Length: 177
Figure (cartoon, rainbow, N blue to C red):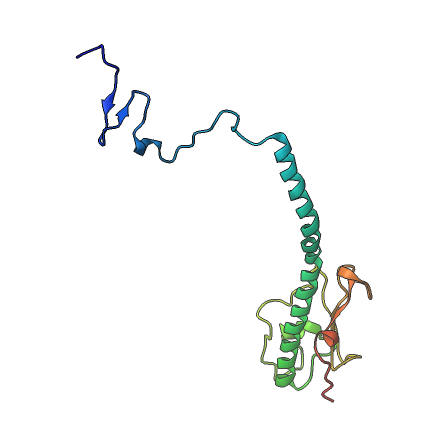
């Protein structure tokens, strides 16, 4: 072995490769950073944080206000579903359950009702999305029956989440008598 020549070997194609060089296959997928280009400056990071904060400030209020709206929509869907069950009850029995029988007549046969074919709901009558019972009155003031929720505060009237959700606003009121 001749020690006077540098420690080099010739790679296919005639290119010399020194001891610190890597074969092309070993260099793939690795990043070489130049001196001074090791990352982001503090100013660049602050600009990105400010932009993200502005975007969150503009977009978040639109979506955070949707929680109450979804509860109102869920209450409307419950009222519509219970209305279909009440209609099926009326077709079987001939009348809607009276106020004293209430929505429980959709689950359990009321006393003295022979043509009851229920239960008319798959599960127990659900509470409204705020955990309160739905209010039911038959005969109703607006239709054959009135079915409604007073919203989050469970008091008549209100705005926002406290708005009243009613069967006569959710669907056209039809008097059959």
